[in-house]
Amino acid sequence: MKPDFEQAHYNLGHVLRTQGKLKKAIESYDKAIQLKPDFEQTHYNRGNILQKQIKLKEAIESYDKAIELKSDYVEAYNNRGKTLRDLGRLDESIMSFEQALVLRPNFSEAHSNLLLASHYHPKLSSEAIFKKHIAWEKSNVVQNKINESYKNDKNPERRLKVGYISPDFRTHSVAYFIEPILAHHDETFEIYCYSAVNRPDETTKRIERLVTHWVSIIGKSDEEVATRIRDDRIDILVDLAGHTAKNRLLLFAHKAAPIQVTYLGYPNTTGLPTMDYRLTDDYADPSGKTEKLHTEKLIRLSSTAWCYRPPKKIPEVKEYPAKVKGIVTFGSFNASYKLNDKVYELWAKILSRVKDSRLLLKSTNFADEGLKTQITEKFLKQGIERDRIILQGKVASHKAHMGYYHKIDIALDSFPYHGTTTTCEALYMGVPVVSLEGEDHRSRVGVSLLNQVKLQRLIAKTEEEYIEIACSLASDLEALGKLRKSLRPCMEKSPLMDETKFTHGLEKAYREMWQKWCN
Image (cartoon, rainbow, N blue to C red; front, side, top):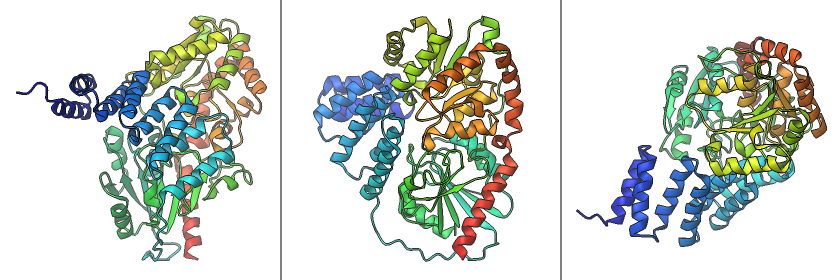
């Protein structure tokens, strides 16, 4: 009836985006822009779709246009920052988040994104990152008087109510580590899950069946959720997200439970004075070394801070590919933004020393052709031929993803931000992982995981050692083959997969926290 009605084209684009029909949504937004080029929100939403489609350069162009039309468009600065991060342009990414905060100092989401991006930056010190967390708290937490008059029964031995809050009770890395815990909590603990999952999936349904109380908190304010938690008489409230996407950290500023704990989803402090404890282990946070970098008291679980459960229908370990192809293939399946120029430099040196070797990198963002070209050129400048670098984007299923470990002989951990899920996956698929030890949690996860499977010899203390260990592994293919066959059985017998013992250790830590509070 009115083909030039730009608002209708814009709204149609929004509906199509919500339905996941991204190509058609772009067409509607393009039509709206054709009719009204100066409508900044259309450019912004177009950028959001392009980001989802992993068309990163085009997404940035759309965000830039939105900002050109509306100079104080804080949401565009925020999403632009995330896209620049995905491209590995960390300095620009951090600047974009900072600009959003200049315009809106209490923009908690942008501030959390800034904190997360800071961990990937190889030149930002632990102390500098800690100061940024303190700044987040000062900017975002309203300093109201906290009501800590709890009605919880102060019996140190009674059955405890533990509440877990997460946006990641779904097919997500966090689920591989929290599901075995929820499956093994004993009868002395009553478990509540406060789910901030926007789009539940099969994993969500599976986790929901494991717990007595499942509460969706989507669309509810922090005040509403805090009231619900108080009414439920939760004794220990556990955050599983930290400053990652869709977190509900500001809810913890209300101190809705007597004891509040952060665990699993984030490699650092929250910066919240109302967060009492952070769970870790002695490898990731050596005693006496990282306490000063936390507002929480560190609780070090015995042996390890992680309990890994691989998905069902996982492929069997196959013969190492170098035996078939005659050439060694190194690999890393860590997210592209964990990689940086120093990482590329070391990997290039390894490739130079191991004749004819290949490097297979797999990340969702490698669907972006511009990013692939950018990374390939970094290796070309180091003297590594184009055909020795293989870049793979997202594949159709998790089973297919795990199958890609059949294509690599040796995994190279990223730094300063180590892999967690990717390291566990590699080890379970029989692929040894070489890791460079750092000073704080983000660069010590590999240290913890490799110690659990008695592969301390794969932990490098210097860049030279990192290169030497990788090259040494590649030089003895017979030993590499034996290691590949032994890794899965070794991992299954390790603390990393002893679900019952791990959960009992966690429950012991919870009980001690509770007894201390009662006293």
